[in-house]
Image (tube, rainbow, N blue to C red; front, top):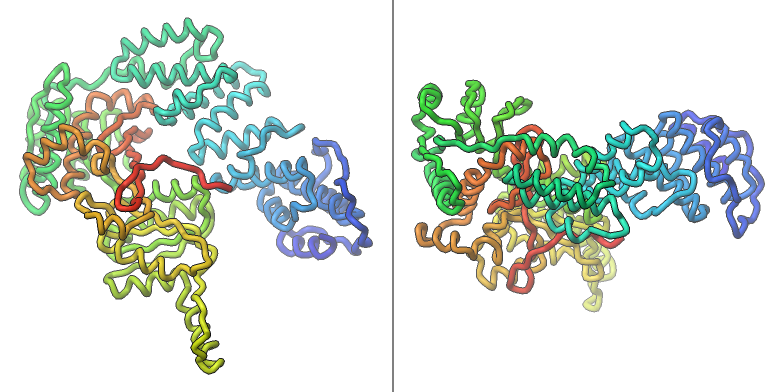
Length: 610
């Protein structure tokens, strides 16, 4: 800690090094007692000088922690992080260690490293002298890591530290924006009579979710809620987003044009979507039954589309047709069935919805981050899907953690074993074992197991069911017997409803994502799925996914206007849990499941034990 630490930091941060090392003294059994609130008039350099002249490690460490805080106040988060990386928590009392964690979180937030910042403050209940700063760090880092309930709780507590009514109102609006991101199960599970304001917010959210498709009924039940919670912040003034949702008029089209590739290379996909839309039209039994006209995108013209009396468009599906229609500045409300050109600004009546493989990969990365995994690796098929998904996964992970993610691609079975060995670094271990065995004269009694990398804590596999089944034993073989099992995650490409019991056993313990429609025990056991099987014998999973895509696209039409102004509006679809972003994109959250001894079980999101 002494002059060595100061000199090392001065090279990185241009600190002023001291000239001598204080004499070594035995560390006290108790750390030095000091005022909980630092003096903002003291600079980081002055604290460093105090640390250099400290008489023991506890006192020196405390001054270094104070110096890190001063760097944060001086808007120098990089210096703060560098300094704190050198400190040892063994010389900190619990109180000082909590300060150290807070300062780490604040500095990381400055660099938008929210996934790294949140764990530092997550479990700190209170911190004398730093209460407001702790709540602010919790609020920001929790919100950006999708811990929306924790973010809302922090903002509720922050109200005690602001005096201006306008600031309290801003916090209330932010609380609402956090809570509308919660899943339906949170509304009842998290209510607590001791948290009066939070319980009121959740009750209001429950009202809006229950009556989301009927603004009139929603308004009536909000009035009942206000009578029950007269002192609640939202009883005096509803959040602006909710006010806008109450005023929004739902789409009630009389004539819908559906533009799909009904001929040509993508005819089968277009027909699957078409069947999904037809099924949704009859299944939903809307109060009004719009006319639906299917148009082949291979032959349609934009002029002909505009000249007809259509008041809503679903499609097109193919990227080039989407771009052409978007650039034509058609004013008819439209749900594009693909992503629009990048950096495009959609009007209030334009929306886009895609079965994007990149979105699936990002959700896998999010899940691993929330569960606490820090060093995943990626094994991906060397095709367009494998490269797109692996790139999206890696970019998201690195943006959140600033850590590299190793990836290896395989084109055939022969390359799979090599890919696994290269990523897990077992080939070098085997070579060393062979060298030692040779030096010992190749004794028969010599036995050794190859050692794999110990820093890997998760593996993401992108491949079809056959590729995943072949990769799994290679991963098992390249994991040392004494090493902990590394959890394997996979994309929806690894699952097929046609897997037999032997296939399922080969995939044992692998966790994967997919749309609810495909997973066992979900929507595929309904009457709708049975009817689809009667129409299409031996339908492939890929075309079944397009059927669900068409079903959800049609089902969303009456809700898109409310979803645009009410971010918390969630639709439980066949393809996933659907919501709308601010830029008009329909997002879908996939379900997670696990291969477990010859069967598939559904999973909830669980946090990895720390």
